Structures are given as structure tokens and as C-alpha cells.
Image 1 (cartoon, rainbow, N blue to C red):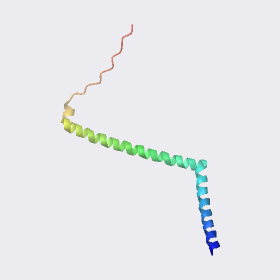
Image 2 (image 1 turned 135 degrees about the vertical axis):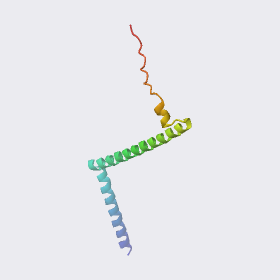
Image 3 (image 1 turned 45 degrees about the vertical axis):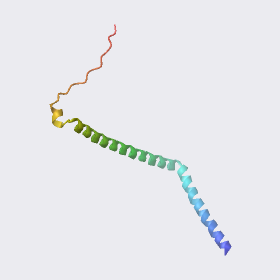
Image 4 (image 1 turned 90 degrees about the vertical axis):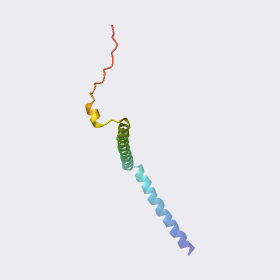
Length: 94
């Protein structure tokens, strides 16, 4: 009876080792590396997109808070003249 149990245990360990070995081998092939790079770049793009979305919403919220605190309204902005930005002064060379 003991021999059967040890045989079954050895067979189970062998199956696990073979399956894990195949998985590791697939990850080290060019196709496996390509998949990993693709997944990582996709994750990075999602994270960057989420950051930009969060940043923009926070910026808009903060801008509205500042406008409320300063008493700036849309009508006030429309009445104010728009001044063009001054060009930087150039040094005269002789």
C-alpha cells in the first residue's frame, strides 16, 4: 500500500514539474517575451490614461474652487478685455 501512495505522489509531483517547466519555457521564447511586453505596455498606457483623467478632473475642480473664492464669473470674464502677451525684449547688438 505504501508503494502505491509514494508512486502516486511521485507521479503528481512529476506532472506539476512538467507543467511549470513548459510555462517557464514558453515565457522565455520570443513569442512569450512579446506577449509579456505587450501586456506591460498595455498596463502602462491604462495607468497613464487614468492619471491624466484624474489630473484633468482635479484641475477643473480646483479651478472652479478658485473662481468661486475670487468671485470670478463667466459674465465677468466676457466683459474683461483680452490683452495679448508681451513679446520678450531682444537685446540690441551693434
